[in-house]
Every structure is written in structure tokens, then in C-alpha cells.
Image (cartoon, rainbow, N blue to C red; front, side, top):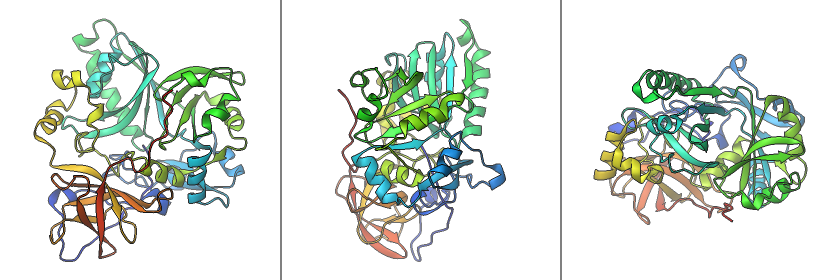
Length: 431
């Protein structure tokens, strides 16, 4: 749910992108740029640049910690955030997370609590997910939808009870999301649906959020707690005692590896992070985070999903609950259900690209055709696979596994093969 990007124009002489491509902003991945335009925020951010002036930047409580560890700080989603640390390159940091354990500061994300007698129904109105049947202290990825079925933001929703939810949304879309919540809360609380009592929304301002990620994350964290982490499987959460601190810990992350996301009250963030950052833990920045999530096939808002993209187009059909498809009682349902029934006009796919890597904005073509059938939304040389990988949207019909396409990279057509995602096998702990 992050994006570092640089807006740029891409031209392909004698090749013409279709209308639905021309409206999209083109960006460069975090791995190759220190400027921002967040896709999740823009419409994470499809149409709003996230490039922030230094005087506008927020700092997490770990800013001094990052400086102490030699971080290269860059503007990202309105914050000053670490891109990398010291002499450790992005590939080395990426590899350390894949083989050992890394620590990420994700405290720029927006953490919220929703409470009230109809909290489940309210959040099911905003999203297409089945929250009523979600077990207590379980989490699900979901999306906030607009009236046209487009994705306002992606979000992690953790159910504590039918009347209490912990929700994490993106930093780049902070103001847009909070305005949307305020608007819909006012509408809900003024209606008969809130007859049992109002829904309250609490933003956890300045709370810390760190992510321990990697195959050794559980072994390391277990040394700091008496809580048996073996019982905390992927997608579950609990309040866990860590060296005297009682903290909300969720098993999961944004890398494809086993790991934990730890929510921390403001007064404890630095101390808890120092406890969690001892060897072999290595701090990791936005550069490694972007390449890790892309290998894992995870979307970056503003690059890979936005307000003009439905969850069906994005390949996120799995998060639309079966019961929600039957009732259709969520915002944007008419458009989403139409895509489910008739098929979407385009689909998100994975690509293996020969030659030079394809970056965001690169046009995709069918062999021997002169009109673009799609566009790359994220692309990198994969440190793990040793191949160039990318995500793209292509016209339906060209999305099937093994389909051979071409990508315009620096005005030269490169062969690309449609490939299933994730690109690497996830390493989630399921017990």
C-alpha cells in the first residue's frame, strides 16, 4: 500500500494508447526515484502528485532513529521516510529480508478504530468484504469503493468484535480517506441504520507502526515475548507482551514473507523499535519494500490500483465476499457486480520482460499490432528471480497465462510473457 514515483510522459512513435490509458498518470517506481506521486493516495494517486515540499513533510517518531542508522531520507506520501540505510544497497536489503529479517517503519500509515453497535454493517457498506463472518482478531485486505466501483484506497481491516474494528489505510490518501469517512459516518449516523447507536471513528494520531519481515522474524520476536507466536497464524492478531509493553501485533505484511506488524503508542515507539532492531534485524527502507511487494504480486495504490480501477479489473475478486455478491449492499456494487458477471474490459497481469526492465507507463502491445492494448503500472529487475518483472493492465483476452506480448522500453519493443502472480512463492505462517 505504498508508492514513490516520478511523473513522466512516455511516447511511442506510431503507437497509440487507447483512451482509457491516456487519462492515467505515468510514474516511476520507488526503486528508481526519490520523488513522489502516490498512487494510492491520489488517487494513492492516480491524478494527484505526492511530491511534497520539505516544509510540508511530516516525520514519524522514528525519524531520529533513521538518521542514527544512516538512512537516506526522501519525501514520500507527505512524510520524510527512509529509502535505504548507509552503504547497504537496495538489493542487499531486499535479500536480507528474503533470507533473514528486516525492520520497516510504516508509521506514516493511518491507523484508526471504528466502534459502535453497527460497526460491522457500516464497514461492509464501505467495502465489498464479508466482515460479519470474520472471526475476532482476524484481518482481511479490503478496498474502499466509490460509487462507480473504483478503489478509493486499499486497507487492512482487523475485527476485534462485531462492534470494534482496527483499520489501516495509506498515508498518501490520508486527507481523502478521512474526508470520505467523515462524510459517510455523518450519512450513516443520521439514518435509521444507526438506530442502535452511532458509529465512532478514532484516528490514532502519531502512533507508531513497525513491520518485522522475513523468515527469521518469528524466531527473533519470540525471544522478546512469553506469548506463543506459533498460535498466531497469518491474518491473525493479538495483544502481545513485548518486554513489558502490551502491543497489538498482527501476523502479515507487505513482502510475501512471514512477519509481524506492531502498533505502538506514541510514547513507546522509539523504545520498542530499538528492542526490535537488534542484530540480526536490519532496518530496511522504501526501496526494498517496493521490490519485495512487487515480487509478491501486491498492489501499490496509485500505480496498480486507483479510483478508476475496480477490484475485478485488479484481480482482487477474492476479497469480494460470496454473500456480498448476493446482497449487493455495498457502495459501488452495481459496477463491481457487472464486471463479475460480464467480465471487465481490462485485467491486471504479471509479466516477465526480456532485455531492459519495463517501468511504469511503458505501453504494452499485441504482436504485430500498432495500437497499445495496455500499460505497465510497476516494473523492476527482480533481485530474487534475476529476471525483469512487471505488473500491467491489458485488454481482456490478452491476459491468459503464457500469452506473448511486447512492451515498449525506451522506444524498443521487448518480448513479455504473461505470468501468474505472485512471482515468488509466499512464505506466510499458517501453522
